[in-house]
Amino acid sequence: MIKQKDWIMIRNLYLQGMNKSEIARHMGMHRNTVKNNLEKEKTPVYERKNKQISKVDPYKEHIEQRLQKYTLTAKKLYLEIIKQGYKGKYGILAGYVKEIKKELKIKAVLRFETLPGEQSQVDWGYFGMFYDKEQKRTIKLYCFFMILGYSRTLYIEFFERADITAFLKGHNNAFEYFGGYTREILYDNLKSVVIKRALRVQESTFNKKFMDYAGYYGFKPILCRPYKPNTKGKVENSVLYAKQNFFAGEQFVSLKEINEKAKIWLEGVNARIHATTKQQPVERLKREGLNSIRNKKLYDINIARYRRVFNDCHFSYGANYYSVPYKYAGKEVAVKAVSEQRIVVKYRDSLIAEHCLEQKEKGKYCTIEEHLKGLKEIRMRHSLPRPKKKELNKENKAGVITMRLPVETLSYVEERSLMAYEEVM
Image 1 (cartoon, rainbow, N blue to C red):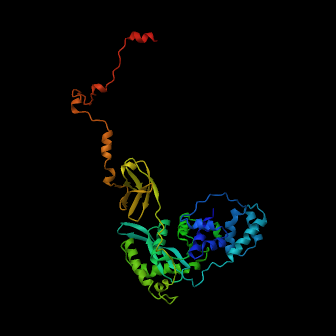
Image 2 (cartoon, one colour; image 1 turned 90 degrees about the vertical axis):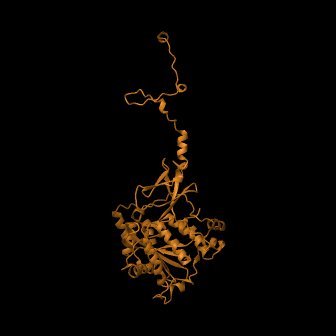
Image 3 (cartoon, one colour; image 1 turned 180 degrees about the horizontal axis):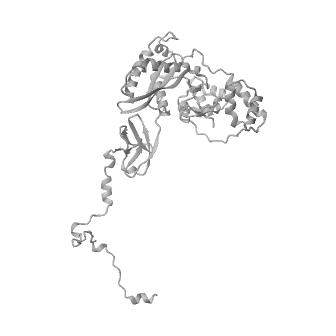
């Protein structure tokens, strides 16, 4: 089974126009392996293997940080980590230092002019705290940025959270806005992309949800080198430009209004003459040659959250309670937020309920009466019949109500003489 990065590379090369045989030769694998992995639209499932631990592993972070700041010899680094408790041989350390120095010599700075359709850049921008009058609460305001390297066409969208769901939603909406996507996308060390960043990309821990997303479309994620902010200058300049040219000095009522006005602002920005290219981004966009999404279904970004339905036919979600048909009481259902205002509920891939999200109150029960219809009749069928009034003992003056059961429901105890018990003693 191939590795995840090879799966992404296969799909990326195929989008660039290479056929299966050419990809197989380029990747050094069998053509059937290429064919099978091109048919997979989800990240392959891999078995976790026990990685052999090297004695130099606990000191790698220290070595990398030192080499990023200073040009040190392997011998000096060896003496440093000896003091920290290193028990390995010098040759193991020298080999690792050689690899790190080789990578540090490679320039990660993007060339000034990007080829059409080659690369775009993505980043988040934080715009501070904002009081949303529609939601009647204060939220954090984040802005998603994507800019195409060749045409400089820009897309922005505001969110109240910078989580993986918002991150992928921003991608999907940007792809629709541009009409496609580039072969590569450049990222900073965002948690939505890479959970743990190492100097060597191969040793970094990537966000599995994002890698599945990248593999679905077939674009290649590129990470900026640490401490090299000029690598993604296009998108960082766009963040500053949006803050000064769009957001500063304006009064907004809600997050919804901000995004509506941002779309209008983008029309003007992408139609202006760009200071660097001396052309309109919308005109250069026509020559980008993006990978089209016209005949491709957008990646489903909604994360299913599983909930157990209580006996009262409700489940908990977002500090409130929502109903499902009574026959699903006690079962586990999948809940997906299809928008900021609506959720859908599924049981074994069957849609069983839809609800508008309650965002103003907490602890509220949102019940659809149709879900409980028929439940009352079932309970009445299985309940005991109520005693009639005439069967109540009216002579009970102590106020305690007693019930006379019908004669046929009583079981009698046979009376025996005490002599019968003495015989068995």
